[in-house]
Image (cartoon, rainbow, N blue to C red; front, side):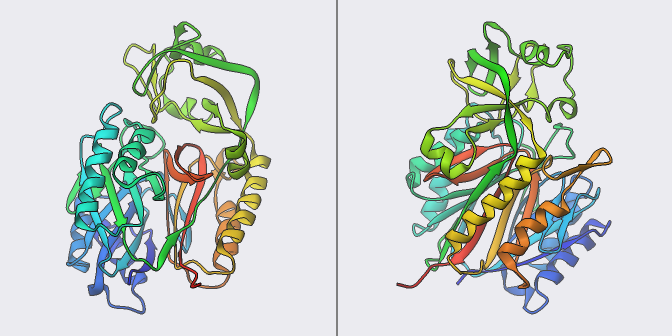
Length: 402
């Protein structure tokens, strides 16, 4: 039987931090039993020291993970330059596959190949947890590749990696190796477990701001309304086309794609969001973390704080119905760095995290691992989907016995 344990640390020494995380996770257990260790870290840590410390503490564990702009544990949020959180897993009912070299053109191919590897290792997999690079990928095509092996009914959940908000480079961990373009799949095969999912973004449409993709390739948007895409998008804000610092544009360039009516009800949003994550060297086009076809219409979106907080309340109401009185045995969490209360020129996240953790956990100690990455993999309306700018929650529960 698979069981979960979590811990976090703000220690500056990277080896000491991961050891502290593991000790906190196994306060009432034996860390030697750990078989899978998932690490989330901010980019300030020394990854070589971190992975060495993880191996020393849990020599029998497979080690995976990724970076983000912050981490979320059962103890709360940390966006310190060196912050770390882990989910330590015992039991052997899982399989792991990992590869480097992910990009927008090969996402489906690598997704299918990694899915084939974990299925070959354990044909009883009933859910797939995914961590991937955050900048150069087509997340929807990764899902497409996994579904080519497992079918569309298997739930897929997880996150893309992040950095310190600069969108310069993200890191993924496997064993003792740090990758920058990695794809990691974990297939869980404990028949007593199921994963629930809930997702919400907090953006509303900007009136009259609709663009049509008139030229594209894979995940590259080349033209909007017949004009070079990046200058056309920036012109809406009066910004010069040479603006490529994504810290300036990420908060304002959310692009919404309309959902069906049925999807809107389950998602509690009329649009699913895409984010320009990379600009071409000539400043004329931009890249999304999803594939994009010509003819797609993008609705420009803007962050709305009231909508964020009200949406979280509604998300938790839907989640309680799914739980049906059950307490999660663990919660995985992928979140957007821009969600929270904007105060003193920064977004404070503790309040919004508390609005999720208490309804799910109450006063119980529930293992919790989250990361502030660039995008999220979350099932909605019966479909595995790829999102940006969301809170995506994945409670793991024991199945109800008939």
